[in-house]
Length: 152
Image 1: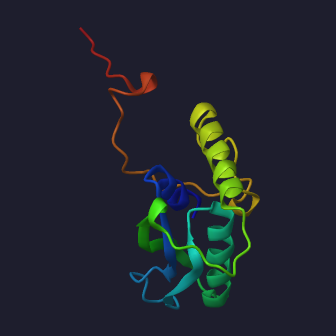
Image 2: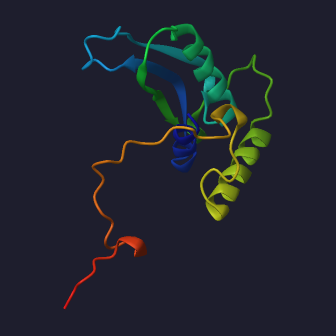
C-alpha cells in the first residue's frame, strides 16, 4: 500500500477505491485453496498513506481466514483522478494541506536517503521473508561483484 500511494503522489493523483486480495497456491491441489478480494470505497479521494494503509488493513482483516498457506497478497487502486480536480467531502474535517506537506516530507527524505528510510510502523519493521531468486540473471553490467572474469 505504501508503494501504491507513493506512486499516486508521484503522478499527482488520488484514488477513491482500493481492492485488496489474498490467495493460496492454486498449483498445490493437495492443500486447502482460498482466494478472495474485496473493494473498499474511501470517503474521499486520497493519496495519504496512513489513511490508505488503515483502509487496506480493515479489508484484509475482513477477508483473512486462518488455516491457509497464503502465497500472494496485494492491492489494486481504482477511480484514480488528478489531485487538483477532486471534490472534497464536506463532512470530513481534515487539514488537506497539512497531510499533503507531511507526505511530501516523507517522500523527500526517502528520495534523498533511500527507500524506506522513513516508513510506517504498520508496514513492519523487519522483513523475515526473502524473495525467490533462484532463477535471477547475473547483473554483469550493474554489480561489481558479478562482473564477468575473462581468463586469457
